[in-house]
Image (cartoon, rainbow, N blue to C red; front, side, top):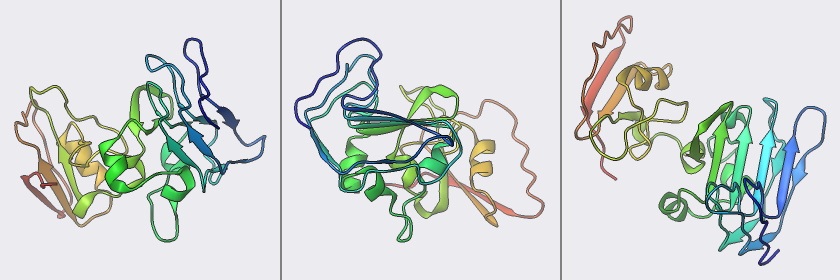
Length: 214
């Protein structure tokens, strides 16, 4: 597919607009998308838009798909709106090749182009989430928080904790650390403590330190 532009307001998917749920089948795509576009002011998914209405695994497979020069406001190449984005886009492992499944390029490229692959988690359509931070595990299991006077503060969601995608509050970062015996929290420079925090981890250790470096 090459040089396809879908015109109009609030368009979804320059080439493919797919809706998946328990009552229909799977979407499988293996193709090249070049210069495919929706509006970069209100469009989603320059090449592909997928909405998954149920908490289901393996509803789509984009293995072999590649994108170049595509554009849109959110998800210049791909946008996934999922009932549960974690189910739709698991953490990439040797046994779960998520990056291949969604057509992601190298980690270096996706980290530098966070608007390339994006999605919504559940009913929260106020925060478009870069899929890089969905399929990438937390570095060294240190969950970062940021609350400063800068242009970006953290956001408490089920994928936060990355150095460049931090949580907003210490309490949520502790929650994100799950069953870890040692809870490791990284404080991004300029963090402002705005309320009283009571840490009660039933004897588990909480370590709070400066943030990691890239």
